[in-house]
Length: 249
Image (cartoon, rainbow, N blue to C red; front, side, top):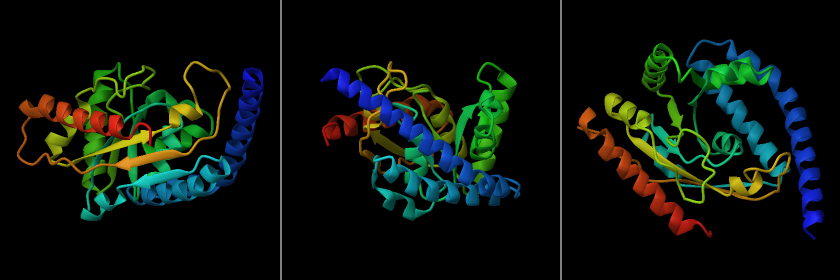
């Protein structure tokens, strides 16, 4: 029956791709129009449209997103949201789950992708990780984003986790930014996106429910740059323990 599963997975991948393209073409004009507004109005309307899109797209994809812990946003913000990264499905899942406006950090070359690049230029802080000046500008832009009461979403693992471990080691960037701006870290954990797009399998996808958990915020009040490693390891442990406790959920 393995051959049948492979066939069905590829048929589902075709369905998912066609659904994404068709729905994106519908959303492209309104998202482009709001992108012309000044910041931060553009990102507020842009993310509201994106959430509405995902509220329809994800159920049609047979990948419902079950969210826990949105209550943590009731205290206000903005937050620096740090999330594990398992597959490309993390992007629509976070768009669905995060209430209110947010920006993420993305590779600068993404803005060159036809059509999709428009969305990246509005919804992301773009950076060339190999260029020190670009990295410096991205930090300044992320600070500006937070000053306008917009959340920053960062994947501290840097790249997708293709290992058999709950998490890859974290980079310092998100935690240095949190300490420098004295903004709280909001850990978030995504489950099951790797089951939808298994690593190492081209044009292969399977429907599966996604669980998205926002955890309790971690304060950075009073911390100094010397505490970056301490904060990083604290958040890493919180997320690691949560994944291990809920892995089979």
